[in-house]
Image (cartoon, rainbow, N blue to C red):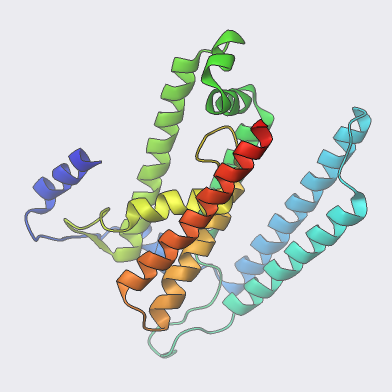
Length: 262
């Protein structure tokens, strides 16, 4: 990571800043879908989620496996769709303080980007042999090797995927900041990256976690960072609170891991 920060220093110069002027890149974090497209996207995503859940339940029943209780699934699905609908309704309201200069309505473009990555990652991890191999290597590399899995190739592939996702995250960050500088990628980036995964439920010991865990953990970190910022707390207080939440999550993970091993 330090090497790439060194490359950034060479490109930007000491104390320099490079502005992002590409309109497509800037639009990712700074522009929104129209209210009509926002509702269309919400309906399409909701229908896809419902059909996917029904397909999963039917497939497990046909295979003679224990499926999730339908009433419980229905309650969770209705709750999620309802909360998402309220969020879309709120986002479609005018959020600009100066409507004459700029209008802020609709779902930000970054939301579909994150959801697409979530769907792809969830499918790869849950429905492919490659995804199962990643869990196996993360849980116990030696056992995976003895089972015939090429541990070295799986690890290389995992690092490549992580690097690609880091590049996407860097693109989103640059779009948000409208520029890059020598401080880009430093400070709390590593804390928030690790915290988002662990707080969401991903195990530090490997073999456990889902794509949605990182998304949920990221939402928690964002609420802490943005919420405490709006309340006027200093950066040090935000770091302390985020670190404390991360410490609790890691502790729970360690305890649960020890309990399952007994």
